[in-house]
Amino acid sequence: MNKPASLIAPLVLGLLLSACATDGGQAKPSTTGVKTENTGAVSGMGNAAATLTVSQVTATVESIDLATRMVGIVGPEGNSLVLQAGEQVRNLDQVRVGDKVTIEYYEGLAAAINPSASRNEVKVAEALVRSATGERPAGAAGDVITATVTIEYVDTLRHVVRFKGPLGKTRVVKVMKPEFRTLLKNLNPGDLVELTYFEALAVSVQPARN
Image 1 (cartoon, rainbow, N blue to C red):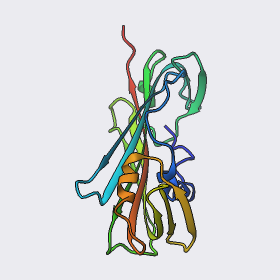
Image 2: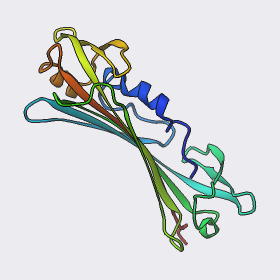
Image 3: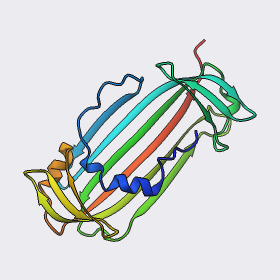
Image 4: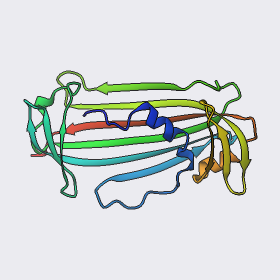
């Protein structure tokens, strides 16, 4: 429905420069009905790595007001929430009480050693996809941010790296995820590493079962 406030470039850029230091591993079992899956991969040469987290929850429509475009949903644990469907949400008149709303959130980070990467440029791209007129309401919105950091110091024993970002700010992070620790072994001072952070939210509505 409405694009979440988390899809704001300055906030995402902050995550971009620190996401590789977050703790890895599978998420703990959820008590809110949210299913979360973590995956990761490393290139054969060890010069690139990526991680992806996918969270999914299914809720049920319990009320809808077409005049105000307010939609009430209830989650799998009985928690209720009222949302306003923006004008970009097509075919709202097809939604009925009892319909299932599936929400998926994707968050990922990729890092690659790239000697030819631009040092001072930050690229931000946005995408919005929605259902065609007459189809069931569905859509997705996402951001992709790419920036390059310059490696200044690497400690493969403590899994610590110091780098300078595109705005000239130096950061020191402890790398926790195993995919990025593998990449860390191939880093040297002066290397340029291109980071790509992305997040997306997808929503679809399925009719209630009779």
